[in-house]
Image (cartoon, rainbow, N blue to C red; front, side):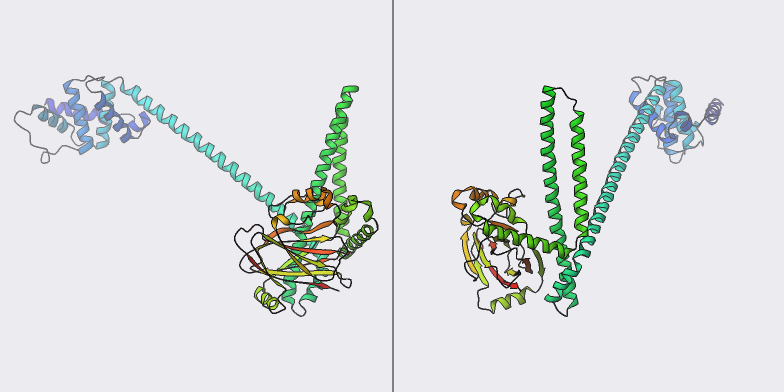
Length: 490
């Protein structure tokens, strides 16, 4: 009778729990049971001192939650003297058929009733869990903000790149419209009756013209920036002088600097619009006439010294393009007299001197190599040719001639375009003062002319000698075989 009464009381206490453990404690039932059982194991006999009867009840709830209701057939056999084992089976059997979830709730409620430290322990665990969740949420929000910021920056870069590309295409289309007729006439002369080759050549000429235009525009911008910087430095110097003498307010100079910048920008825009409105052929003709006038002045005023050399750099830019028939070109050059095939030794530079022809108005050149690249550039010597023959000169890199005009000394130097500082020293040398001035038509750069034929042309700026330089000075061990051809147009 007493056993049945105890069993019914336990079942009633378990079944009448008003609030489920998961809702009351803020944890899922299984997680809360795991925390309660861990707390019981770690603190039993230390911080928790329970009676023998209370321990039997907790162990019975644990067995019911782990294995389910007690079954005699599956219960292990007990010894005659195993009193503790028999008491545990009796308390387990008193739980009857309650579910595992009810057994977990009974274990939690009983432990909470018997131990006051259990509830604060669960609260501390819950607070630690909530703090961890808050940190994780903050970290995720920060990562999301960083990702969104990167995405916005990438989007801005894409939009900026799109705008720059759109402006570049608009400028290139405007230049192509100006030069199309001129390049079309030239292509028809080079490839008569072959529209495909004409279209390829026109495209190459337009692309080269666009790059040359952008280079000139970049140099103009650099010159404007240098001029603006000099003016600003001068204004600052004047401002300091006024402050020392009369203590004038600094706002006046700032206004003058702003007006100067605005005027320069307006000048830049006006020059660009004027260049857009002028026809290309008239623009080129003016350059040719100006260069010829300068050559005439050189012949009349050579006795005044070298101060007038700066006027000879105003010449038309060269036109350079490529074509793919390299094997055919090599065969044609080799089939000639053999003058168009040269072996350039390692560390050497070959200069082909081509005088201007009285009956010509434009020079053309073509060249290619076997297997390796070569440095190539064109210079113009403002001197009356002493012979009409094309001559070839071979020199080491240390024996390069001084061939830099004063107006080009401010341009950016390239490791493969020669030593401009050495050329400048040569110009300042009294022994070199008697030499004819030399202007750069095309700077020396390495050309991958082993895959395709490099072709170019340049209108005569006046009477003089073209210097076609093939530079192999950067090669320490390897010699190069060069195929070239030079001719002029009437």
